[in-house]
Length: 263
Image (cartoon, rainbow, N blue to C red; front, side, top):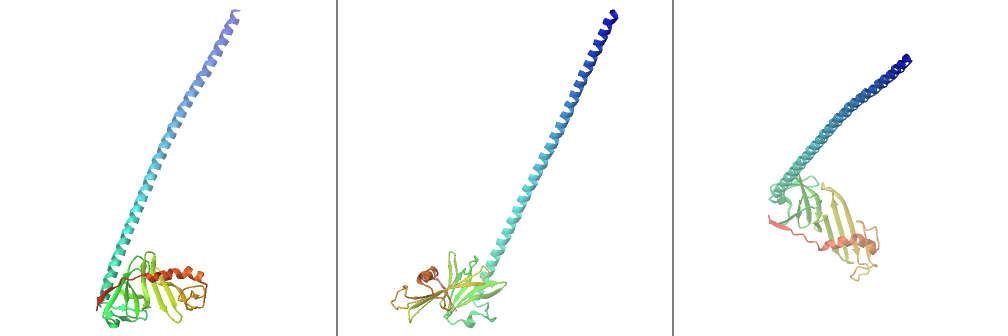
C-alpha cells in the first residue's frame, strides 16, 4: 500500500516537473521571441531612420539642384539682356553715323551709298519705329519719292524695306509694319496695302484692299467695286471687303511725327 502511494506521489512529481519544464520552456520561448521582436523592431526603426535621412538628403540635393538651375537660368537671362542692350547701343550708334553721313547704307541691289550721295532734299526726315515688332526700333528715312527702313547688324546698316512716298512706318501698340495709302480719281478710288515682317526683319506678307466709286456718287455703297488682291482680279461684295478693308481705312488717320535734320 505504501509502495502504491509512493508510486502515485512519484508519478505526480514527475508530471509536475514535466509541466514546470514545459512552462519554463514556454517562458524562455516567449522571452526569446520578445527579444527577437525587439531586435527586429530596432532594426526596422534604424532602417526607417536611415531611409528618412536618405530621403532628406535626396530632397536637399534636389532643392540645391533646382536652386542651381534657377541661378544658371537667371545668369543666362542677365547675359541675354546684356547682349540685347549692347546690340541696341551698337545699332543706335550706327544709325547716328548714317544720319551724320559718316556711314554708308547697303541697298537691296548690292550698292552702297551715304545719304549725301542720293538724298534729293536739303532736309532729312527720319523716325525711329519698330516696324517688325521685335521690340527694337529701326531707322526709317523719308525722301521726296521714297521710304527706306534700315536695320543694323554686325557693323552693317542695310535696307530691310524700300518703298515709295505713299508708304508710312507703323508702330502703334500691336500694329507693326508699313502702311500704304493712295487716293485717286476717275472714278474716285482708294488703294490700301499693309506690309508685315517677321521678328528678324524679313518681309512676310502684304494685305491689299482697293475700292472704286463705280456709280460716282462720292460714297461707298454696294454698287461700287471692291477688290482684295494686288492685281484687282478678286472682286468681292462690300461686306466681305469691309472685314479686311475697314482696318486699313482706319489707318488713314494715323500720323507719323517725323524728325528733321538739315544736311
